[in-house]
Each structure stands twice: as structure tokens, then as C-alpha cells.
Amino acid sequence: MALSDITARITAATQAAGRTAGSVTLIAVSKVQPLERVVAVLEQGHRVFGENYVQEAAAKWPDLRARFGAVQVHMIGPLQTNKAKVAVDLFDAIHTLDRPSLAEKLARLAQERGRSPQLFVQVNTGEEPQKAGVLPADLDAFVATCRAMDLPLSGLMCIPPEGEDAAPHFAALAGMAARNGLSGLSMG
Image (cartoon, rainbow, N blue to C red; front, side):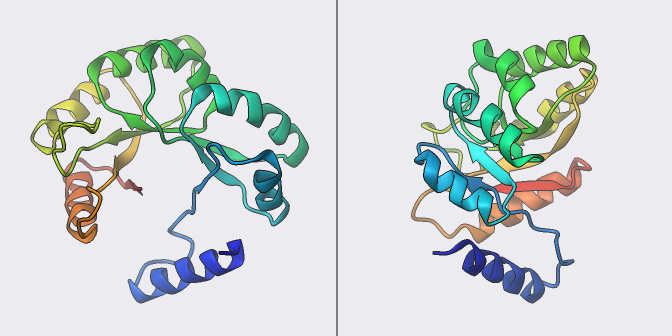
């Protein structure tokens, strides 16, 4: 599907939902995509991308940013604590903050650098044992812990269980975000 078709569908869905125009951001997932496909999307003017792997992003995005200017790159895959330093320097947002050890590492790095990427707490709304993410029952305490570390939380992220209706998971995530005073919602 062409980028213009995708953005048209997003615009229509945004209007149908009664949301403000421009309130939804498409994150084009560029993980394991050939460079020429990513360049083609950049040449069409899109500037927000998601990556699952720190090493792949580190090899790809510095040159693309130099070539195309203001490009946002978001970490949407699991982040190992030992790769947090590279991630903080590389990504504009991290959507997979899911455990205290990672929060502590990100807080330490933010303190050292005087800045931090946007951070989204990953919530395991389906309570699937094979998936990462904070369980809904533990979310409020985890958000409080992150705030006590002065982490700049932007919102919450979830990936609904495959094969299930995503709407109840998205609605639950929106409720959790509102309850915690967070405005950003990231939904895979």
C-alpha cells in the first residue's frame, strides 16, 4: 500500500473518531527493510520511523539523518539494558520501557546527558506470559517509580494479543494513561 493511501486512511479514521487533525502519528516500521525501501518512503516526505533493533538502527540512521534532515527514529522493540546508552543517543523515543532496571539505567543516562528521549511504558494489556510489558495491575506503581526518578514519561504503549479484537486493549490503555496523567498512546 502506498504511503499516501495509508495517510489518507489515517486522516479518515481520525475524522471519524472525532479527533483533532494531526493528532495521530504514523510510525513507519523500517526494521529489516532494505535501505532502498526506507529511502523511498523518506523521499515521499515521511519523517517518523520505528526500529526494533539498536544495532540495525545505529548502522542505518546516522547517514539517513544527515541526508534527509529532521527524521525521528523510535525504538519499538525490546531494549536490553546493556544497549540503553546507544539507544538514548540514537532514538527520539523509546516505546518499550518495561522494567525497573531499564528505568534506572535510563534515569542515570538522562541525568548524565541532561536530556532523554520520549519514553513510553510498555503495558502487557493481554497479560500474555510470552510478552514483555508491565502488567496492568502493576502499572500505577511503575509509573510512580519512573516519575520518582524524574523520567520524562510521554505515554503508554501496548501490542494487543494476536487474533483478538484490538479495540478493548486500546480503550483499556487509554484509560490507564488518563488515570496516570499521560497523553501519549502508542499502539502496535
